[in-house]
Image 1: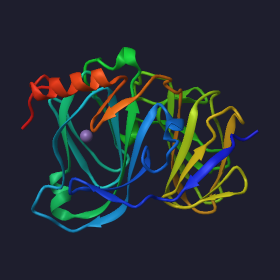
Image 2 (image 1 turned 120 degrees about the vertical axis):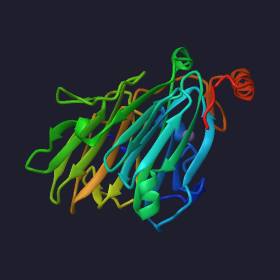
Image 3 (image 1 turned 90 degrees about the vertical axis):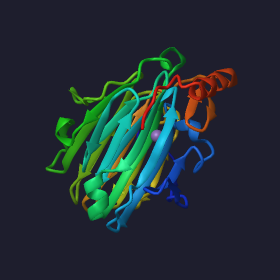
Image 4 (image 1 turned 180 degrees about the vertical axis):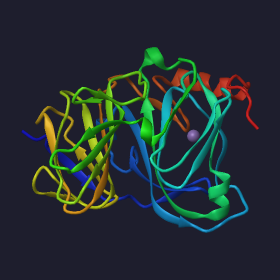
Length: 291
Ligand code: MN
């Protein structure tokens, strides 16, 4: 049985995050029952856009985070990251920045300077992965995952490759260290591919069509830049992806965190009191310094 589809969402109207990211927010604002994607709290998708060459930095200047992880995946263009825990990195095509804000930090996110000066095609995803209460105050951590670091599983019938960022498939593991159980796959399907993908019991599941077009579970069309929410139940233990043309898909599936959520801007906690504490910590410089 295939996991039933809840909804195929076309890209919500984009908005600018800083001056560097034009994003479609599929959840939590794009779809009102977004909690069905827990542990994934937020998905900002910068669909393909061509940037002109620029002398000015493009991105989001210093800002705080606490209580969760930001995961940035580059499909086109280059992104630079700096944080107050002393970590920094640049990712390009296929790269992933997995930043655990945990107990709280400051960071900034910009187009890499060379890319900003040359301009070019830009496409990326940012996910906010929630942390359960017992891990909300872990020390900040930064994982820089290059495309070649991902696990690789061949899609049957010379159908392409399923690259594993996090989680496990057919005994192969993705490199990302996570605090809760999840599968995050970067799936590259060749034209004509047919790929049956297992979905773990109880895991909330969705796919973003980054490139190409798909047919899902036999008859549902999922065009470029669309997000498919699967039902948050155990209506099936696998999904079927068919690619009438070369396609790229981001597969997200994770064990839900069944805890209260309190959010204020860049802080994601369990209670209002914890949010007030986070704001106090930020205002009194507890998250360190970053120029
Ligand atoms: Mn940020």
